[in-house]
Image (cartoon, rainbow, N blue to C red; front, side, top):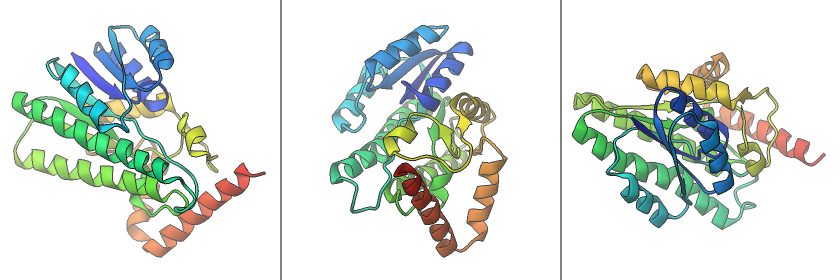
Length: 254
């Protein structure tokens, strides 16, 4: 049994790789940081293959798939992703494009390619890591929120297609709130509410995946936010998100 985990060098991806390894899966871990992937390899119980891949480069993403496609992969975890804090015009264009490449294009590419293989065998599981931010507008982190909205809609649409086809392949999305990961440093943010640990979110994500849940919420807080996003007008959600992000900016400049 083998599982592919992207963004496996830290955070949720790191913990998912460890927990799947403990369940008996051989891990195919990819990220850009070789040193951290070597650390993961030592932390896992079973076999771990590591790949240094920059998912912001489409060529590298496809080359990775072509390298491992002949292996018996039962699980794909699309965890890699990043965000940047700031107004739309402040953030460098290249960072915005890289975010779209990693958070959207790489997830779409890997999901499509591995899904095609899984459907031929009529078995397999795909777990996409989303965010509660995908349920609302996100001024001052506009691109990141938008990419997570895309992943949510993509995942739920594919899931319906698989159901209509009576396929035994499952696809799920985990939508955590704040998580204590390296993402915070990259995005340059501090959360105003307590973040959950990566280990806890990974545990909930894996449990939900094996229960074939469509949307996995790691806690009551995430479920409550999801309900609010279906009730409150978009203008209120947008204003609320703006105020939250503005407070983060103020905090970061103290």
